[in-house]
Length: 135
Length: 171
Image (cartoon, rainbow over all chains, first blue to last red):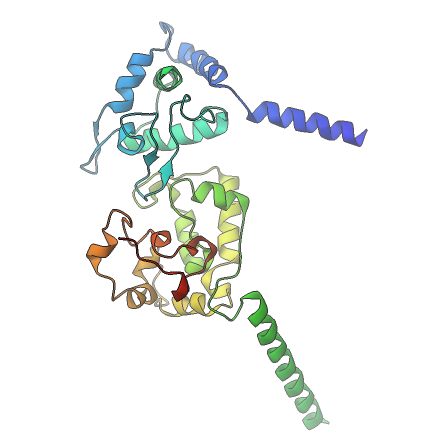
């Protein structure tokens, strides 16, 4: 009985934590529809421009996602503190976008870092779509 | 009677001190190496962006200030959910420089004026005096990056081991 309960708990926790990029895209789609009734889907090409678009940060620096992740998301990137960042594109790093909490944590931090505001669900979905599509 | 008590206390304290010193020699306390310290959340969260800095490198007040200002963490937004933040804060405080028995942590702590709360280890007098023979241009090498990247030269830095024999300055 106890063993069964433990197994059940394990199954449950695995289900909560693990996700696929497709499941995450679905979740962002639900949010995007709430944010914008005229939502018409995610765009990988918008995601690609979003990834590379430079923003004039209030610190005086020009920053983009690519500043740390490099312009090719199949490559490893580097944080400002010299730490390697594994590739963002799922083709180069299948671990990407498989943990919803992790994805939200980093969107939360990095959108504020780069854009100095939170990202919209549309932007998050476009970004994911781009990185899932990169061959 | 009183004298006899005093003698007993003296003997007990001498034996317990030597026992402490002896055990300290075995587990790294009292030596230069910082004691092994680990916490899963500390490891995952703090090493997401930079090398792991051993809690024995800064005093409690520094860790508290750092963990209470994660939204502006050296120019980056490093916010955590409250539970994770508090767990890591407790871990850092419990193993901070003044709580550690190793010599290096104690010297770092003693080199900080009591009215100062540094967030950068490199700002401590201990750090600057230990690195005064390394030129600023060396730190700027691509293989090193900055003074914050201990691990570039001290390969066991993440374990709190900064011993002379472990140093290799990359070209």
